[in-house]
Image (cartoon, rainbow, N blue to C red; front, side, top):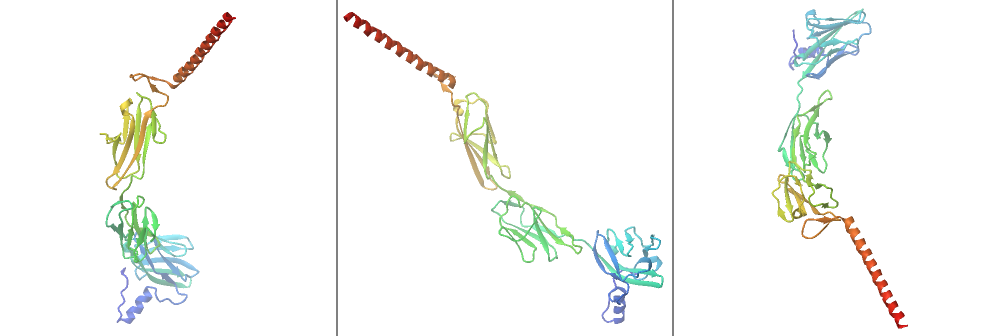
Length: 368
């Protein structure tokens, strides 16, 4: 049994012609023929018939160039709508009502000659053709580096394949040459001129003979970025960088930023570097000495970027000190005392005016 593809010797013309006829390459107009097919391992393959007789009684498919019973794969009888498997049946083959042979999950050893016999009321028609199953080979991908700094470092990515049509994907989106990236004329090299934090997943792909995309493995970049901004969240809340709080109250400050890798933090209070290296500072009971300006410094040593944010802690309006002790009078009480002082002054002035008027009145009466 010959399952191999016929090899045609150029100096033996008779063998050449016979092989071409067996492969179904030379077909007389109107003669039954099989359309050759090239498939991929793991995918469905099929051999389709041309010029099918209208009164077909049975389609019988065979491995090789002969239609012997020992080579039979499967047959189908349209009149009775019945199928029969043969010695070469693997469980993956099926014949449609149009006589087409379908092979599920094609394997490399499915490659070879296939012969179909079509029985009609007036006789038998035969045709032989070639089925080739190729191994699916995904492209390989590599890069010159996987660790970059945002907007500073370029990266070159290479797609290893013999294909001529290559597609590039950055974070799942197909890309083409633009101001930020360039694809080589042969399509096998992608250069990202300035990588940003969103260019983290790289992949190339090609279209196989069945029209499906074969994608390479993904390359993940480590992109160092930020901090781009620094925010200071406080409790109590601050307004325009001013935090007003009472002495003895609890004050919390949290420094946040967007950066990778995790940035370092430093705090400065009134020009002096504090020993705090965390993003948060908590003052359980605010003292006079803890008032003043705080600065949170965020540093990314990998991206070589540093930013900071300031905040001013001051006494809460409406509280004033009395004497040398840490004792304070509320604003409402201050207003009350001022009003009472003014009213008392007016009252005293009224009494003085009254007494003066009374005194001068008595002197005038005595003189009279």
